Amino acid sequence: MQYKRVSLEEALALRKGVNEYLVSTQKAIETGKFDDVIPLEMKYQPSGNFSKAVIAERPAKGNVPQVRYRQGGDDHVLVEYGNENFDINHRCRVTALEKALRGPDAPSWLKENLTNTVGCCTTLLLFYDGGKLPRDQLLSHLQSLEDTLGDLSKIKVPCRKFKLPLSFESKEQTEATQRYMETQRPHAPYLPDNLDFVARNNAFSPEQLKSNMLNGTFLAVETGFFCGNTCALPVDPRMRMSSPKTNPSRVFTPEGTFGWGGSCLSIYPVDSPGGYMLIGRTVPW
Image 1 (cartoon, rainbow, N blue to C red):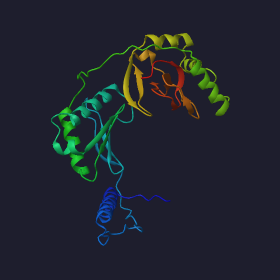
Image 2: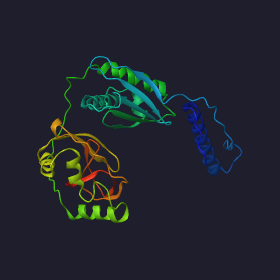
Image 3: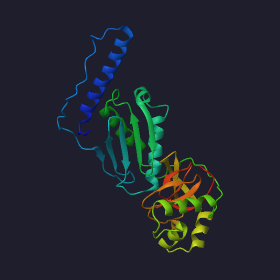
């Protein structure tokens, strides 16, 4: 099998042909008449005339951040704030845009064809029906919403606060580390104690790191990855850290794992693969 790059228009036309073929085949099976079934085009050659992934861009203006719009396949558009740098203000803007898209004032054509939205640190992914909703119409609406949102530097975003228990040692955590060392990588700077490695990597003592984790407040900026891992950042800048992830990633991480990777923490809601450093365990979230 070999993939060939096609334009959005070509992809939608090909998909339309496949849908028509399936509908006509189903009708033929029901009626017993196959004369109207047109075989699929099996030797299609793309034109090679495809556009760039970035389909539009608006520069920053005052407190209004730069925004890019990227095409993602037939049915996705990615709205990206800032220049690939995280800012809590950008995350708040993602929330405001998502609320506007899902609000009661959203046009009917959008409600009918917008399948899902997924907000992240600085981006909002839109999943829509590309066969029914023209991309240019969606893009025009998104840009008009940017004008409506304007300066959000003083906006208040509703939040909920949760207090979770945290243990730094557990049987499951130890077994997961041992399994990793026996089956994937026996030696690494972060083995056998992930917590000690993260502390040293940020000039903390293990006790200082534990104190930060127990007393700090963390802002959840996304729920994603496998089965909804919660990713969060420390609100207090003095508690911010950076840490590489395991290489290779673990094939097993116990549910409730409280891990650190890059600049954020993550809570694993179920048993799953993962590469965040094992700091401790809490209740599955």
